[in-house]
Length: 379
Ligand SMILES: Cc1cc2nc3c(=O)[nH]c(=O)nc-3n(C[C@H](O)[C@H](O)[C@H](O)COP(=O)(O)OP(=O)(O)OC[C@H]3O[C@@H](n4cnc5c(N)ncnc54)[C@H](O)[C@@H]3O)c2cc1C
Image 1: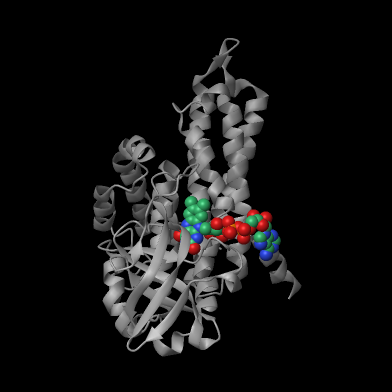
Image 2: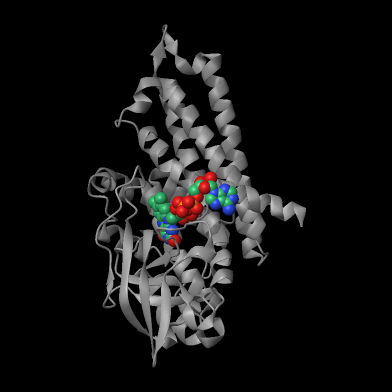
C-alpha cells in the first residue's frame, strides 16, 4: 500500500496543523476551565470544511476520502484531542443519516451537519448499559403521525450544542427492536441538565440527556419505515467508522506527546549534558517513535480500506485496540522523559495523559474490541 501523500492531502494536513497551532492552542486553557467547545472555533472549523471532509458535495461535503478525514483528526488531536473527538462524534450522527437516511433526510439534515451549522450527536449509552445494545430502555411509541420518545441517555458528546441527535430507541410496536430516530435538540422535552464532570477531554462537551415525551414526526425515523428495527446495524456500522476517528485521535495524541518529549530531552540538562544523551531516554524515544509510526500506518490503512468501501467492522476494532494501547504506551513513556514536569500542568503531556484514557473506553471498551478482533479470525 502506497501512502505517498498527494499535494491535496499534504495541503489538508498542513491546513489542519496550522489551524490547530494558531487557533486551537491559544484557547486550550479556556476550554480546560469552562469545559465548553467555543462557538467561534466551530465557526472557524466550518469555514475550513472540517465537518464534511469525506461526504459528497451533493449534501454539503467536500468529497474527499476517509484518509483526509483521518489526517485532519490526527492534526487537531496532536494539539488538542477534544476537538478531534467533537468532529468525530458529529460524523457519527451525519454518517448515520448519510448511510441509512432517506433521500429527503439527507437533503434536509446533511448540509447543516456537514457545514457546521448544526452539531450532531449520537445517543446510545444509558444508565443501565453502554456495551449491550439489547439492554437499552429508551422507548419510541407511535402516536398518529408522530413518535413519542421517553428515556435517559448518558455521556452523550455534543448533546448540549444546538443541532440534531440520532437516538437509539426500543420500538415498542416492533417487538422492542432498535429503531433510530433523528431528533432536533430544541424539541420540547429534550434537555441536558448538566455537563458531565470528567477526567479529561474537557473541550469536548459531554452531557446526560433527558427525553421526556419528546414528540417528533414519524418521518424522522432514520431510513423511513424500512429503517425501523434496523438500529443495531446502524449502530455497529457507524461505530466502526467512529473507531477509525478514535484511532486518528490516538495517533495525534501520541505524536503530540512524542514531539514534546523530544523537545524536552534535547533541552533538559543533567550531569552537564542534555538528557537525550542518556541511553535510557533514547530507548524510550526509540520505542515511542516505533509505536507512533505503527499507529500511523494502521490508522491510514483502515481509512484507506473504508474509502475503498471495504467493510471495516473487524479492522477498525483491531486498529482501535492497537492504536489506543500504543498511544497509552507513548504518552506514559513521554511522562518518564519529562520526569516531574510531566506531572505539572505547565506541560501538555499532563493533559494528554488524562485525555488519552478515554480512547480505551468510549465507543466500546477495549475488552469488546478484543472480543471483536477474535470474532474476526474465528469465523
Ligand atoms: C467522555 C465520554 C463520551 C462519551 N460519548 C458518548 C456518546 O456520544 N454517545 C454514546 O452513546 N455513548 C457515549 N459514551 C459512552 C461510552 O461509549 C460507554 O461508556 C462505553 O461504551 C462503555 O460502556 P459502559 O460504561 O456502560 O461499560 P459497561 O458495559 O458497563 O462495561 C464495564 C466493563 O465490563 C466489561 N464488559 C462489559 N461488557 C463486556 C463484554 N461483552 N465482553 C467483555 N467485557 C465486557 C469491560 O471490562 C468494561 O470495561 C461516552 C463516554 C464517555 C466517558
